Length: 367
Image (tube, rainbow, N blue to C red; front, side, top):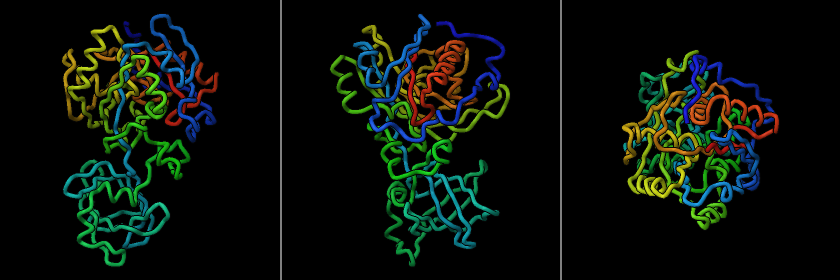
């Protein structure tokens, strides 16, 4: 389908909309399948109202869902500066096999290279010492766990993996629009897909939060294929576009993987006349990055692909996604795929019909 074109589509203000605060979901529904689902046809331009539990009926046999199997790590850190006692917060961006943590840090005053912070567990108990070794050009820090006799951290403890330590001192890094970013115990399970298996994300691929084992079983019984890619969602997914023109925006980079078995499933789906349905914008970015040459091949690496109006989609035939923030790269992607006027209308209807928005909210299926 030819995408809408027009000079105003390059302006970020074109992707703004009014959203009543009460429509921003603060927690998921007790049954994930009960989330509402708006279906949008790009050919008929019809909009219908369903629920996620109806997906096995809405989709067709031979369709293929492509999930993002990344796993959210408890990347948010809370503690205090050992030198001053002042409060300190951090967000782990990534770790390496040498025990280095790359993180963003926030505190009052100016923190210096070599300072140490005492990290607290979720109950507020001091558990770990972290030393800030170097500040990088992008403003992030390289840090390492240190021994601490008072806390009982020995040289032997330093051999524990970063992921093990994060399970002790880390918190779920909720977006700011959910309770100001403050997690509750339920978020440990709620803000994770049931199929997550590849640790590395600091934000959930939220379209995948809707699925249950029972729903997967019903879809498989109907002949719907299910496969996966990996994209470790980074903090850039929440950063607003701060320039007026989309062409001036520097897209964040994220690490992804597309395996050869998934490529084969997608090829078989296409050959059988089925549709490839990406579950979430993150799955879209992996698939379309891997197909930039015009054909789909196995791929692994960093992608900074910014999908905007005029983009040629080579792989996906449909997109299951939540309702996104105004002025975000995500809403730009969705409108590039679904058609600008049609998706503007869909968002207006979602507000009128009181759909629940953002990470813990409802979803739409664009085909």
